[in-house]
Image (cartoon, rainbow, N blue to C red; front, side, top):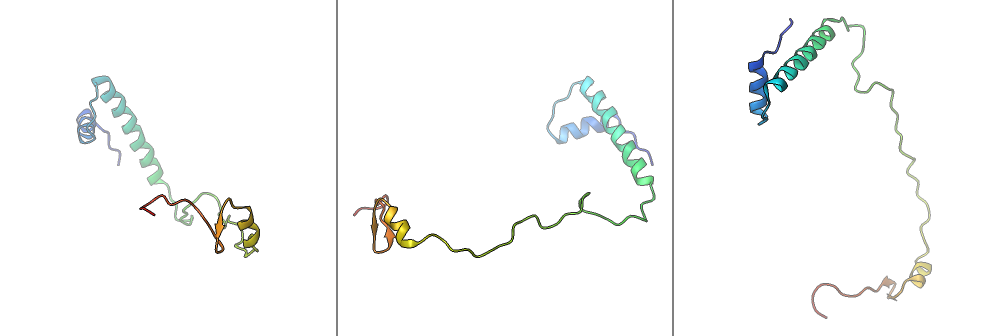
Length: 99
């Protein structure tokens, strides 16, 4: 089923998209959209019953690294390097509210 887009269709689509197209642009889009529909017709006419549906053209695998538990930094060593520490916590200036 070949459907050719006419100028009225292009003008209607442009209006729905709130686009202002010149007559030359309407002609250009008419040809482009008609060609796209022709290609879709060719693709739809192919027998694809022997092919399994796919969601990606390449076989994919989990590309993430393995989630491993590793030791973290030593708390005492990190607090030693901090500009200010108090009761095993970083001490930072108050920025909200009053003291």
